[in-house]
Length: 226
Image (tube, rainbow, N blue to C red; front, side, top):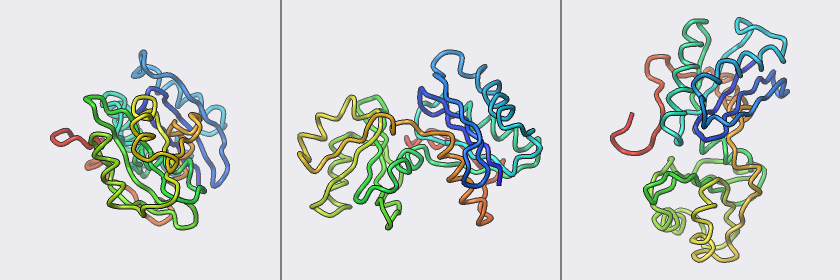
């Protein structure tokens, strides 16, 4: 199954092509400047590197956020238009889930944390390892409220693995509250890779689970935004 996966919800955009379990091509780019004009050329490059045309794709997966409002809108609109024009299935993937999936083999609780500004973070709670599962919905709240939620939703012992650019701002708060229970992943895992988006999309498509062109929208998380 050939799947194109993209994520433009953070300053680092990522586009990838997979075929089954094989990564065929992947391209990352800093989308802070002129990101709207660089996405389609990047998609075109990835397809050329993979030596396939868009008609040969079995579907597309796109990161729907939370993250940068502008970046998410561009990514979702681009892939919706592409899939609609080609009559290909589309799947929306949580950016936070894609980041958590980078650590999926890690036993224990996994918490991606992104800086949402306004003194808030985007966060989610997953259980890693063989018991991989989502524990919470995608959240937007203060770091203190998120850590309170952790105390409610997860056991009081064991390591909690944090990942994401929100640690640059709130890592000290996490350390002060959790001490040695908090483990910070290497920054290389902070990025929601296009390959991961594609892989998660393929898992859903294999079970006949895809989204509608008409109802798939960005997940800004913040109330009142759509």
